[in-house]
Amino acid sequence: MEEWITEELLEKAAQVAEKGICDRCLGRMFGKISTGMTNDVRGAKIRDALRENGREGNVQSPCPLCDDVFDLMGRFADAVAESINSVESDNFLVGSRVDPSSLKKEKEIIEEFELKDCESIKTELNREIGKLALPMIHRPVEFKAPQVVACIDTRFAEVSLDISPVFIYGRYNKLSREIPQTVWPCRVCHGKGCPRCNGTGKMYQTSVQEEIGNIALEMSGGKEHFFHGMGREDIDALCLGEGRPFVLELSEPRIRDIDLDELEARANRSELAQYHYLRFVPREEVQRVKMATPTKTYRVKVKAESKVNKEAVINSASSFKNICLDQRTPQRVEHRRADLVRNRTILWVKADNIGDDTFELTLETESGTYVKEFVSGDEGRTQPNFSDALGIQCKVEELDVIAINDQ
Image (cartoon, rainbow, N blue to C red; front, side):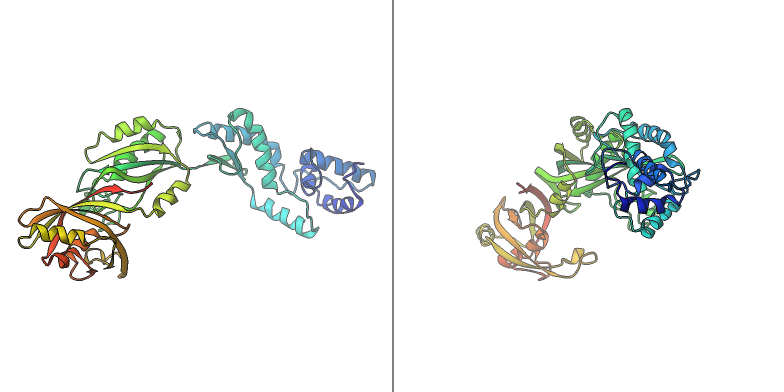
């Protein structure tokens, strides 16, 4: 008798064997006690020991616990390999769905005999199917962060794939004052399609997201794209310079290693937006991009209600150096933002191209600053503001983001 088969183990094994379960299920009930063997071998050794003591138990067919599901592992492995080989990945993992009645019976046996060293039927199925499928798949198993998980429903031998997303970092320039950053569902039908949106379900026909996302989806064979920007500009604003950082997420891609040079070239045929510095990144980059709070540099064209004095404009601009603003939620967005007072800093402002009643301002601000309201004052909701400093009511006619100062 094997050394690891103790009298205590035999006593419990004798009681478990009375349930009529197969050798594999018997071995699994004590699966963590010894190593270097499969559960069916472990179970056979335990049963041999029980037989020597006249207590082997009456093995039923099919097994009342697993219903002989392990006899179908070859079929399961073929189905898993076929599914995984239909997609591109560097690694894989096998999962399973087991008949709930088997899981219930397993739990009852474990609790009835207070078994502490057992292994679950799902764990064994996952491992053994994976071992059989591995030679047919030609890529390694990955337990911590698999790119694709093949889950086999052992009741029907059907496989569903859980494919991890692909994440692509880049920077974009927005060259149109008539498109949003992301897909904007129609306010009337909320994406269902109606006369207002001509059945598209969208407020705008395209977006920065769609100009690159639709191409990436086609190249990857993915299901859907999501756009994570480092903030966003207003629809009527441009984003110039080095551009705004973003991460494009592609769900369920069947091809992971798409040609990013080709993606960039195709996306940059657009006259509405341009994309640069594309590279693959891990999921964690999404959080970094979304949580970043870089300062931003803007260029705005300003219209004053009356003629301005050039020196006064320059002096007013230079007075805003590291000045903290109290900005109450602007009137233009109060329908969708909480009515709060936010503290934001203007780092510096410079004025040039000063005409009779127009001029340009270049300014660097803390992330989240409402620049249009800083210039106009928003009827006193932003204090201090440029209009009050100049003594003439002003408003922004055009706004461009010229730098996102993300290191």
